[in-house]
Length: 416
Image: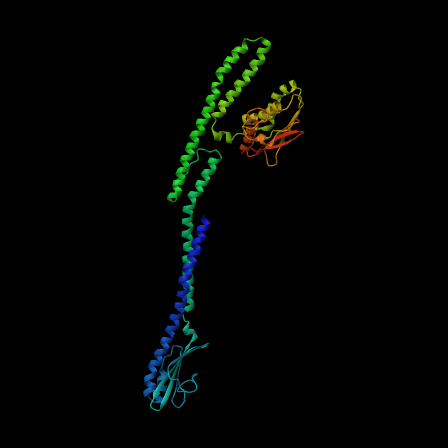
């Protein structure tokens, strides 16, 4: 926008300057020519009385003392004699005054009637006098035009900057809000319309923050309500025989920890989540170890491929753990017992990691990655949770499915 405004002003200024300078340059040339011709005609008017009434010797003496300032003055007498240096007029004397232009300049010829015939007075105005001062004036006009053009560009650039800076600040604030920085605000400035947009963006950002805070607090409150039934469940489990009691109490503790994590996550600031990072290798190894117990019970073959070194990614450990749990939970929920699966973690070019979960089941439809879509009677949120986790790190989710099984890969970006 700034460049377009500057180009528009440059084009407009150029047209205005040309419309002014070209006629001015032409006028300067005409004025210089008229000034030189007026000086030549004054000499003609000075000589006409002397030539019309005087004698040749008197006229010759006047021509000798005449100051011509570079002009050539000649008089042809009635008997065709030249009283000074010969002129160019030949043949009969003209009836009226004439002006003839040539490469040497402009020749003024004036007939003078005498009693004994017609004499001719001739003044040659050199071309140098006709265009005297024109070149210098043209250069001055060109310099003035260039100065005005540069001044117009400077003013246009300042004006464009004053118009585009608020728009640029508005775009930067919008990008910050899009990246999750809900504290970003616009400093309204510029034209009234732009200031109004900035004020509206600030109100929108405040409203988004209020709605997000209310939503997260609601999620935390809902999770907190689960603590009461969990307490009752714990009391019921403690009354069971020791063999079943210990196993159920472990499950209750795991569920209680999950509820606490949900509450902490709901109350965590958005920007804190954006700057989180973890070791993908360690998180995947921990979650696979958790699911390995169930895999042994269902006689599922488990193949774990880890790189043997830390792979930092731009995801909180709890978020990545939840995503891996979602993928592994899908394997157990949508494949029959005895179906094997493979978990692999590989480094990505440019940093980050790729976490893939592959099984030898019947495969998954492409629509499974859509939120709320499930072919096995579940909530349909597992793959969507994994997708959002990958995208929040700057990566994405890739799904490959066939009759030989399904592979879900999480591409995780490097830490910021």
